[in-house]
Length: 127
Image 1 (cartoon, rainbow, N blue to C red):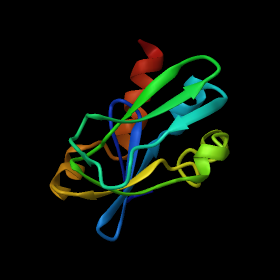
Image 2: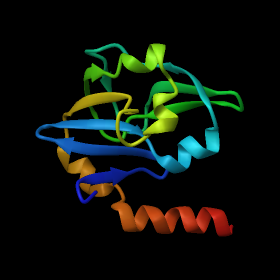
Image 3: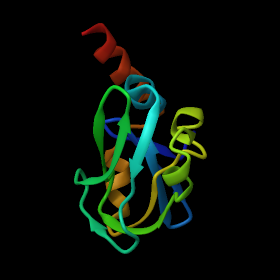
């Protein structure tokens, strides 16, 4: 997963050409438990890094999903509307939430790589 970047709020972004595929991490998915509802942003929405962009709800809690970078939503994973459990089955695969066309791709380099993110999780669990 060398091409995947992570936020401290447990979102991920994987660059696929000039588009960032975005979702929540396995850690976030496990913390939420069984996902029962996902609210996706409209295609065309312009978002800022750290701005609430989607909502994920589980039996335990509802949580906002933040934009990992500035950009425009160019696609959403409509499958999640009818099958939100895809997030539990493959949070970092078929359970992606939205695709962004980054307006400032350099922001990706300011996010964590996988090893730094794993250390971040260890600190959270230890703290």
